[in-house]
Amino acid sequence: MATQHIIGRTGRSYEFMIADPANLHAIPTAGGVFVFAKPAGEHPKVIYAGESNNLYNSIDRTTLWTAARQEHHATLLLIHPQGEEQARVLVRDDIVAEHQPPMNGHG
Image 1 (cartoon, rainbow, N blue to C red):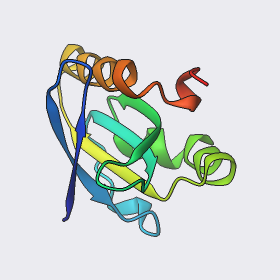
Image 2 (image 1 turned 180 degrees about the vertical axis):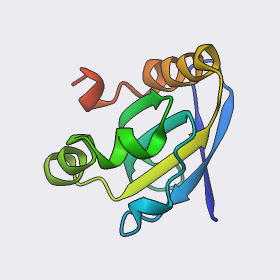
Image 3 (image 1 turned 90 degrees about the horizontal axis):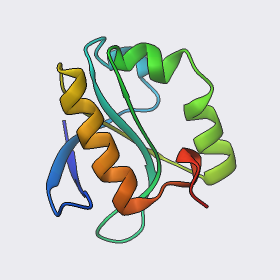
Image 4 (image 1 turned 60 degrees about the vertical axis):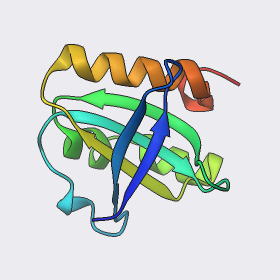
């Protein structure tokens, strides 16, 4: 699976797997951080960053991915498996602080 790095406010680079939006059933049911983005040169434009104890349910069973695609033209679905909730929240918050995604209430 191809990967994409996203830099947080702390300067840390997080490696995300690029998921296939046409095959949501391949997304793991494990915990992790997920990002909806659109290509923008070397680094994608982050539209939404979230965390969940079940990546599949948070992406497939909510309207977030649909809204990101329809309202913000997101085409990249990125996942970063991470089992520990505290670690997930730190990664998500670091990314949100740096990118201020519109669907996270910024812009």
